[in-house]
Amino acid sequence: MTERHYLNVAPTIGFMCISIGFIVPSRGLPQECYNDITPNDISNDAISALTGVVLYFGAWIVIISAFFRSLALHLAVCWEVKLTHIYQYISLVVIFVGSSILVAIVMSVSGMQYTFGRITYIVPNYDRGTFWGPLLGISAASLILQFVTIGYCSTLVLRPWYNYQMLRWWGFTPSPDTERATGVQRTALRIRKIMKLQWRNSLITVVILVYVCFLAGVFMQLRQFHQYPEADRVAWFQCLESSNGNKAKCLSLALPLGPTEPQLIAVLVLLVLSGTLAIAFFYRASMLRAWICLVKGQPYPVNRMSFSQSQSRSRSGRRGDVSDFTHSSGQFSQFDSYSMTKG
Image (cartoon, rainbow, N blue to C red; front, side, top):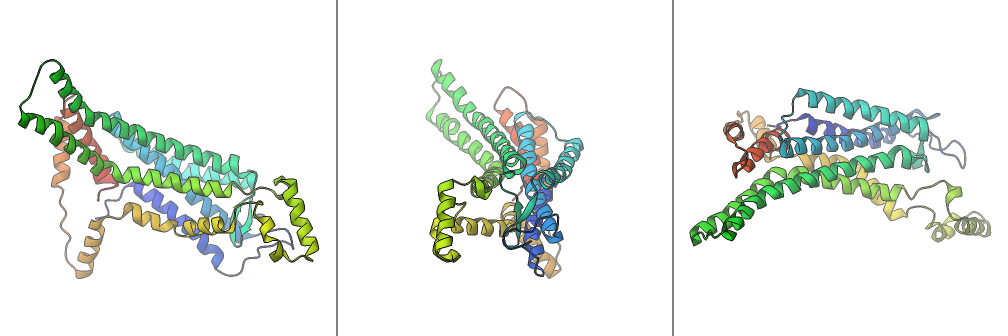
């Protein structure tokens, strides 16, 4: 009862890669430093290269999958496009091949090195153009598509109310029972349908974008040391000189030189726990019930009646009246509720 879908499986693989990126350097003791002041990079440390490739490959898979997820919902709901295997093949190729190409660009143009202990990060000053800029752009496009889809659904909710107000404007005065049925019950029913079918996808897109924005806001504070303000750099060196190299006495002067320690700890905790996002996004109660039945050796009952009904509703929908919403919600239910995020 996983109701697996390729736009669910792909980001799950991405979250797994991000988690593996933190597991690989935990095995053994990688040589983090080339000398006293220079960290090792991907050119002279295999663990650094493997960690960077897996970590950023997973990040790109998650972001690009979220974009195709929002695009698929937008096409199915707003334009009533029936998504075929061609869309599936294009999505999978762009997700995995595109992620590989983007990681290769990062490695060849920016380079990676040990930055946070055993964690590999892009060399500062090159990360904006090769990683964070495209990443934020794709995330923003996903969010825009999601908002447009929600706006379209909102117009479907308000259309019966608008038609009703037009009838009243031209002299039609319904009875109290009719007014209550058309003005309250129907609108509430449509709102419930939209929220039930779309809340999970909207939440996934918004959470991923907020997640990415927070990480970008912290990591983009990192720069090459000579790019920080000269006054801050001079104060840091003078303190080290007066304290005979005891950096513990000069930590207060290092605050302007990049992100703070609490910010870095928060970022690392979010990255380490990123695998739990997959569970939070794609968990459904039917999974737990199916596992219980599997452990007990009992067959799990599969009910496809509602799916057949949604197909019938979408085929019987007509344009130009209230059944437009039924037609659209039928297609939406086939795509999202049963194939992607049924729960």
